[in-house]
Image 1: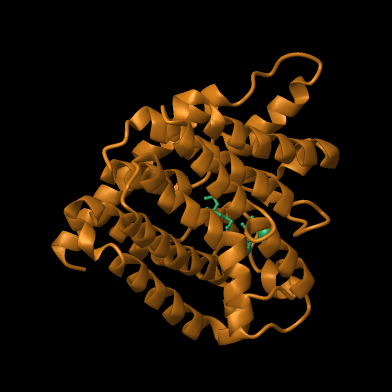
Image 2: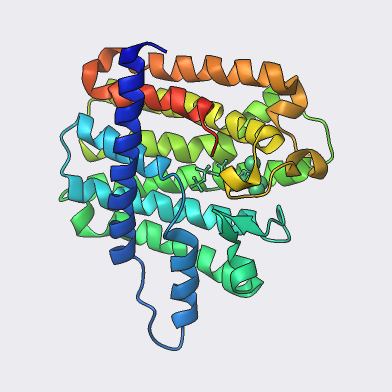
Length: 303
Ligand code: IPE
Ligand code: IPE
Ligand code: MG
Ligand code: MG
Ligand code: MG
């Protein structure tokens, strides 16, 4: 690796750590307090959301927002919102009725640490809180911008987004899907939330449509690369590094790009998508350097 590349990757690691700590404090202040007869629900929401995760979606929001000089406090609320929505998707994804995973972010999954009913409700309430945060005036002074954020996240999370993709993922267990079908499954279950994260800064910054469009395209390709990398890590990674069980996709007969293409070609596909993702940001000069570097990071990661 050349020296320039090494220094950009080191800068990226530092920036990811900085965003992780910023997201952690935003989440801590935005999640409900553990009070009242319903305190157990808030405890489970906090358990599922705080103290772990790469915070890549938060990073996308913060870096995207910085391109348009959005106030960091506003962007941090959107970053916390997408991390809540994402944490909800993980809590439900791990339930016995779905992937039945007992380990997440290096600790027992929420339904293991609490119980299934609490995990379902914690996911529900995390999702609701994510939208509530976007709708609150502190997120943006312009109600139209807040409305646009709410509508974009709803589209990304719903029947034609993450939830729809999860439906296809469940229906595909034990069946063979072809490449285009797996691509669509992954674009919905993972890509749409990552695309939202990449686009959110442009919404906050009232960016021209072309710039928002380029960030969306970056998010789509990054999301596709990211999920193939997740599939590769399930096949080849270690549970210690990943903080979740590995080797489960093949056992469950999951429709993944590794199942369709095999490990070597799936890796090539992920690398190609990562390069393509970075290419969409060519016009953004040096301020997008870390977003471009993130594309290389998602396919090289071990966690
Ligand atoms: C895991 O996402 C779920 C997928 C969409 C593959 P991440 O790998 O971003 O999970 P955390 O947030 O870092 O734990
Ligand atoms: C999950 O995909 C995508 C979500 C919408 C949560 P996976 O089922 O592959 O995610 P992991 O491997 O459990 O994190
Ligand atoms: Mg799953
Ligand atoms: Mg899973
Ligand atoms: Mg996986």
